[in-house]
Image (cartoon, rainbow, N blue to C red; front, side, top):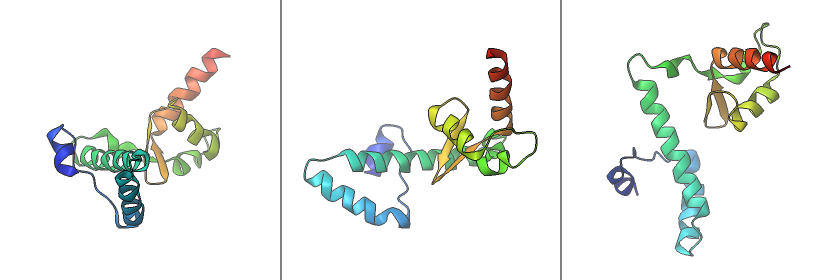
Length: 120
């Protein structure tokens, strides 16, 4: 699978030990002609690999990303974790998902706050 990905310019997919059971289950489903679970798992694994590569780059701005729970705990952020997570899922703020956690920057949330105030 990784050879096929790399031939198309993608990084190798890293299947975590925690995902091994899901991976085998997805492979069994793919053998039966149902590719949805395998595609989803591979997309998540490739995204994880890309995030690892981006974080390793020199002068990477991805080092500024932190979990949403850290950002909303600051007093100058008026939103709760659930709302900022919703904004991230909807693509309204610059964010990416790593495992179960959404990561974003404080500047992305601040930018949204300023943009939101202008619309009112």
